[in-house]
Each structure stands twice: as C-alpha cells, then as structure tokens.
Image (cartoon, rainbow, N blue to C red; front, top):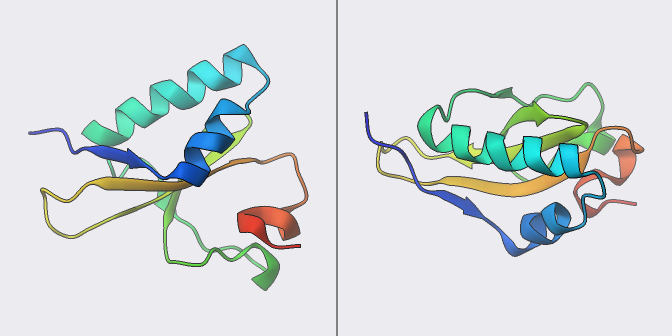
Length: 99
C-alpha cells in the first residue's frame, strides 16, 4: 500500500503553527503522518447542528485536543487535503471561520 500525499492548506498550516501545547502539536503532527497511510482513520463529520457544519463534506480525526478536518478523493492517488485543525474545546459555532 502506497502512502498518500497529505496536503495542508495555508489556513490549516497557520492553525497548526498556533497550537500552544507542545504535546497537542506533536499529537497533531503524528496524526498528519498517519493520515497519509490510513486516510480512513477518521470518521465522516456530521455535526448535530448547522453552526458547526464545514464548507465541504469531510472527515475528522482527533489528536490531543484538536480535530483535524480533511477530505479524500476516490482516486487512490489523490491526496489527503487537510483544511482545518480546530481546538475542540472552543465554541463550535466559530468553527471554520464562522462567527
């Protein structure tokens, strides 16, 4: 089995850089590596309320206090695209840039 490329968007890269906890940062970095090998590690993200709905259908996997939101294409060569890394302890209505 070949690993998929993991592409982290600029927004997610900024969110990653702003993780204050060294442990959470290490957990998220480790999970990003895992996603390249086991892209179905996360579950389909289907929030119970509209305020936490992302702009695109996606999957989520958790690492430390953070949710990693990503999408994968059907093609086995398509990359894993991480578009958001969100602190799960924050108000979910502000997730994905919503206010």
